[in-house]
Structures are given as C-alpha cells and as structure tokens.
Image (cartoon, rainbow, N blue to C red):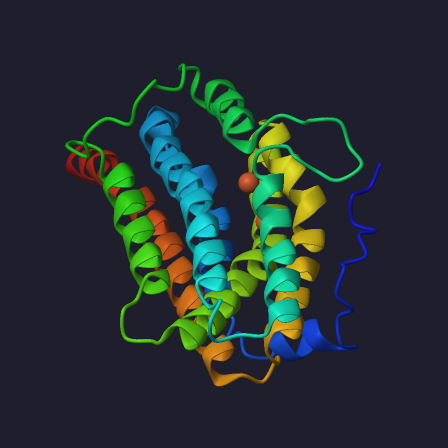
Length: 266
Ligand SMILES: [Fe+2]
Ligand SMILES: [Fe+2]
C-alpha cells in the first residue's frame, strides 16, 4: 500500500515544489551519488564503524525535526495564527513518521528500530546500547561533526524569531526533498551488495509524502520565493554534501593501508 497519495491539509501552490527545487544546485545529489557508487569499495570490516556513524547522523534528524517544530512555534508573536498551526501540522507529520506514526495506519516500527535491524544484517553485529566515543572511529566522528553543524544552523542566533522560522522551514524542505533521491540511491546501492533493508525501503515509500508536507509547510507560512527559505535550502544542501563527501573520502582511508600493502608487495 502506497503512502504517497497524501493530501496535505494546506493546498500546495501548483509548481511550489518545483520552484523550491530550482534553488538546489545539485551538490548534495552529486555527493550522494559519489558515495553510493563507491560503496562497493568499502571493506566489509569497516561496515560496523561506518554504519554506526551513518546511524548517528540519521538519528540526529530526529532532534533536528524537534528543533524545527520548536522554532516555528516560537514565532507565536510574529506570525499568523492559521499559518502557524498549518505549518506545524506539516512539520510534525514527517517527524511522527520517524517513529512509525502514520495517519490511517497501525503503529509501525520506529525508524531507529529499523536501522538497528539494517545494522545487524549488514555488519553482523548488534547495535550498541549507547554511542561510544569517537576515538578510533572516524565515521562516528564525522557523523557527530555534521550532526552538530546542521543543528547549529537550525539553532542560529543571528535571526529574529520569524526569520528563523522561515529559515528552518527552508532547511526542513531540503531535508525532505533531497532525501527522496538519497534513499532511492542508498537502497539500490545496498541491494547491489545483497543487503535488503526495511529501513531503506520505508524511506523510499514515505519521502515523497514528506516532501509534499514540507512544501505545504512553506506555502502556508510564507512563500516559496522567501529569501530565508532559499537560504535554508542551500545551507542544508551544503551540509548534506559535506557529510557524503566526507563519508566517500573515508572509503579511501579504509582502503589506504591495503593499497599501500599491495604496492609495497610488488
Ligand atoms: Fe527516518
Ligand atoms: Fe523524511
């Protein structure tokens, strides 16, 4: 059953999503594509560390969604009453989806639980009860770094409440829109390696709906041409591109000793 036939509570202006997408420069999509193409080069021995870093990074979106919702609601004195509750509904819906809460569906598995199953299947190890320190795991260190960068952008202190809410909605839209292609590519890349994952499959199913909610959140609260929305979109694209570029670089680093060994053995 498809979850993509969702009608957001706020009508989205025709072409609203397309006009927002025009502000993307392709940086994040290129970095995601590069990482997925190089995934087969990652030694299997690196899977536990790499997927721990990936899992940390993905969980940080849950806090980001909470921050985005808080920042929209914090514009209580500066934004229109109806605009605010419609934007909140369209931000909370994708957030709730992270925890398996989908309208008109029985309670599903939280994405965090689905990730632990993916981790066990791919790495052969159980997911740890707590995240360890970064020491000796550059994947986790990069996951923490980019999670911190994204949260710092959302929690920025240089914007007044209304502008910060608009910026957060732009950032949120980029999260949801870019993740449509991101999860299609990640799913295909892992399937080529023989790993089928309910975590990846669930995202492939819900991200188009999330993107439509994110567009509706913007059109109910401000406009698709708002410069603060555009700034949020571009900042998230930069942050996500940075994460995937670093992760693709770490594949090289995992292979470096082996390459050096092969060269030395000639
Ligand atoms: Fe998720
Ligand atoms: Fe999403």
